[in-house]
Amino acid sequence: MKDVRLEDLPLREDLRGRTPYGAPQLDVPVRLNTNENPYPPPPELVADLTKAVEEVAWGLHRYPDRDAVALREDLAAYITRDTGFPVTAANVWAANGSNEILQQILQAFGGPGRTALGFEPSYSMHPIIAAGTRTEWAPTPRRADFSLDTVEAARIVQERKPDVTFVTSPNNPTGQSVPVDELRTLVEATPGIVVVDEAYAEFSSQPSAVSLLEDFGHKLIVCRTMSKAFAFAGGRLGYLIAAPAVVDALQLVRLPYHLSLLTQAAARAALRHADATLTSVAKLAAERERVMEALRGMGFQVVPSDSNFVLFGLFEPGAWQAYLDRGVLIRDVGIEKHLRVSIGTPEENDAFLAVSKEIA
Ligand code: PMP
Image 1 (cartoon, rainbow, N blue to C red):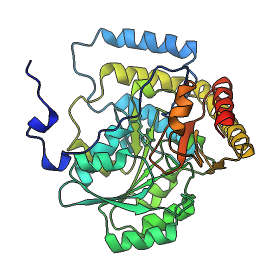
Image 2 (spheres, rainbow, N blue to C red):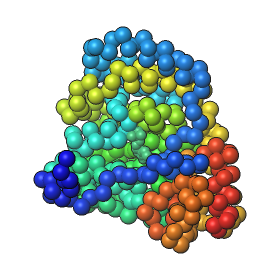
Image 3 (tube, rainbow, N blue to C red):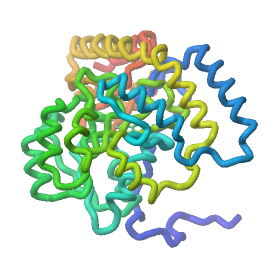
Image 4 (spheres, rainbow, N blue to C red):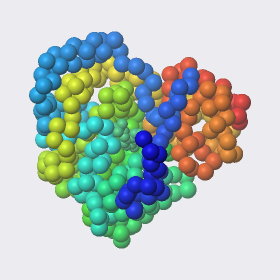
């Protein structure tokens, strides 16, 4: 085939020169760069999932349940248990990872002529999904210590009136959560939709924003994922909790049968083993505290984290490569002098700390 370059294609002007999301996927001994759960699924889960997938495989000639009702019921039961706030399948919508949920939200509530606002540094996919849906992106800075000044944030959203505002709590890549009463103030002040991205909620000591749906069903969406605490990143399952009308709105933009029969069956099997899987959360939180303390002891500046990763510094350029050269893959999230490490198993964390000691 003749060599065709990207520049030769009639690509949308607004996409020219952009870079895709690209956390490196490298085969190194210690991989601590994408905030996955380091513990593989327990054998009972794998057995149950295999059986469930085998059972549904006989029906693969038919499209799956387009509305994924059984899975949404299971997710609603989990959220009710986890947050103490009763929700039903009508409040839940699921997709292939919370990235797809975020995309559907911007397809429905963003788009050309509309604006989405985020408090940066935060999750890098928010602006990328905004670009893909042709939603104008309004980046708004956090405090110098990366915490969110919610009073200032409320003032800014009142002034700018974004159609969609993203609040990531705990925030990736910096780690802190926003207390729920401060979120309430911010949601109250916001004229448009507020998406609270709770991808790391299970690791946090702060209560979920789900309880705010009682008062703010007309503008609040809480987004979650099974990729982190649930150790199901490879299964690709994200979901939202919102008013049923929000779920109705997303039906207008979702692709039909977007969640495969296999994904629905596998995710339900994973949810049946939630208690076993989620025992890793306390272990990871304890390891996070150990890693943060050890890093501080070595003289690093450590940003307080309520999640399964830690942002730390201060580094000279080249530090990311120095870790990699020693077999430890962590993340350069583009914040000057800082790197982010995901919390792994105790052995992985020890390997990371040993390299940190050399580099400090
Ligand atoms: N939101 C945040 C804040 C994240 O960090 C991530 C994953 N890195 C996601 C959403 C998307 O995760 P997934 O698509 O795997 O559910």
